[in-house]
Length: 324
Image 1: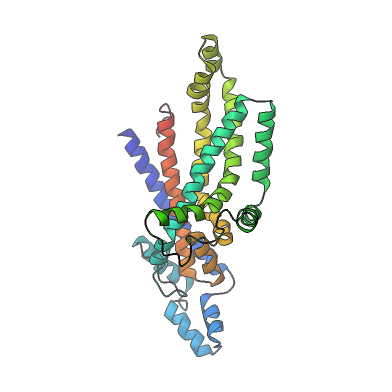
Image 2 (image 1 turned 120 degrees about the horizontal axis):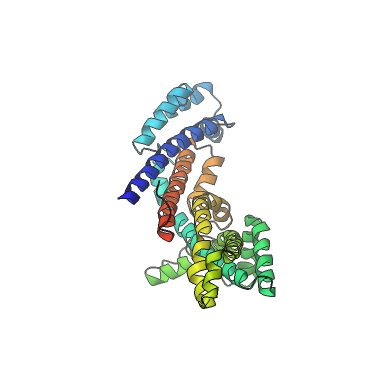
């Protein structure tokens, strides 16, 4: 019951945060130079003032900014994200079509980064000061410092162009007409490079965090007591050190899980992955306000959801934490 009240309180805070985010995003996008009417009129080759005024009236851009904001917030509350100027489809439909691909990419990258990061961090802490520790630290630093887009391009050049092991672009093989297990395998092959590219940066962060927290926990009194009682080193590492060291890693992972979706924009663009990140990039170039705002709001919603899950996991990892 106490955990339920705790999660409901966090949910209420998340909904309030989403309303604030929606308002701030609306104002920031409206403050940016350019608008969809200018883009559409330019593409149509029409500069007639009457035509431009007609477009502004059609999209509701001729109304005062406070009235536009009130209309937008009212629709958001009703789960109506509006209509895409450019795509001529409901924003929610466009996002729903692209969101599964992004969730597949970021979910795979998130799991890989956690597994690799925690494993390498634990290995580094266990062999602190050895060549293993130094090698893992150097590799983590290299991946942390390397720009994501450069890593993606190098992966395409090496594994697609040179070695021809993996496809470098798209979600599936165009025109292959695959189905069933063959389609799943084809998607998995296309997923390898973008997922690994996105995972390597976060893997480096989790490895460094796991190593640092494990070394700190190893110096605590309860670990020294377990050693004095003759508990096996492997059991001390798993049951005492790693479990307590995971708490900061879980917190960091929960925060970065939502940001990973926004960070997928570069990855999806380089690998032509048809996800929401690529959709946001195209909407920005086309000044498609409603689509851009909808994509921002959905990514913010996912970030809030991941934070709620993190709060829940945090209490499950360590039941001693007070639920307040």
